[in-house]
Amino acid sequence: MRAWWCVAAAAFALTACDDLAPPLPPEVVPRATLDADWPSVPDDAVFAEVTAVDVDAAGNVYVLHRAGRKWQEPFPAQPIAEPTVFVFSPDGALIRQWGAGAFIMPHGLSVDAAGKVWITDVALEQVFRFSPEGEVELVLGEAGANAQGSTQFGRPTDVAFLADRVLIADGYVNTRIAEFDQQGRFLREWGNFNIAHSVAVDETRIYVADRENAKVQVFDHSGKLIESRAMRGDNRPYAIKPLGDGRLAVLLGRDNLDRTRAIVRIYAADGTLETSLDVGVPGTKYSLGHDLAISADGYAYIADVVAARVVRFKLPLVPNEPQ
Image 1 (tube, rainbow, N blue to C red):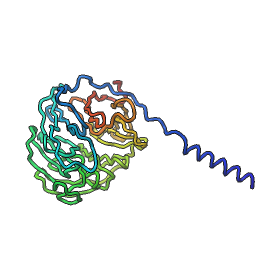
Image 2 (cartoon, rainbow, N blue to C red; image 1 turned 90 degrees about the vertical axis):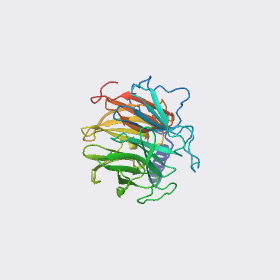
Image 3 (tube, helix red, strand yellow; image 1 turned 60 degrees about the vertical axis):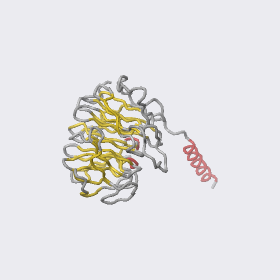
């Protein structure tokens, strides 16, 4: 009897020690070499929370930010008075600003093949299409209506394009990809995600950052699930972008202990990891990688929502190429 008690006590002590053990340190990966001279932001055009970034066919970079506003719930009722979209030339010069008075809590920005700019607003529950100069051309969703229907969204997050189809990740409340045509007619919905935070496509696949499930879900163009890729270390994927030939870049914003980071992983076509790069401010609470864009000339652009900045670096051309 005494021997059993000793074994049980020892097991309890080990369990208690495990419970009291400090958490594992954050992952350490090589740091990317950021372009310190990009972009050139005038003193009177200061970023707030930078939530999204994309690149048009000419290499111009569109940056979405919240212009003095931070995420807070319940959401404010008043639109942001300052411009929320900055457009930079490839060399980082500010070309124009727009979006003042248009959004309450802007989230995602995507540029389609025709140069149209699609922006999601999680407070307005709407998706907007703009001309490159900022003129509203199309509005999807009912303002303030939170539902999962053909004309409503549940905090939509991101937009991607597949031929004449518009794929909307929907979103923080809803659990789907909602498809529309270019004229805004609802086509269908599919998927079951725990915060579909980002959607992207390549020649044969659709990729969804299933954020709170810590997975990248891979589908064919019909929406059939092909593969479910768990993120290493249960890290949360915030954005994804195909690199061609089946390769994929994934931006991780948080680890499994909810420490915010900004780590880019590059995966081969078969899902094996090629390389990881840290693009955040040093530390575990000063950056949160939120969106990712890739230009035709091989630059990666990262929207860092906590550090209120957009940065760029040259992508490695081959696995483990030094930065």
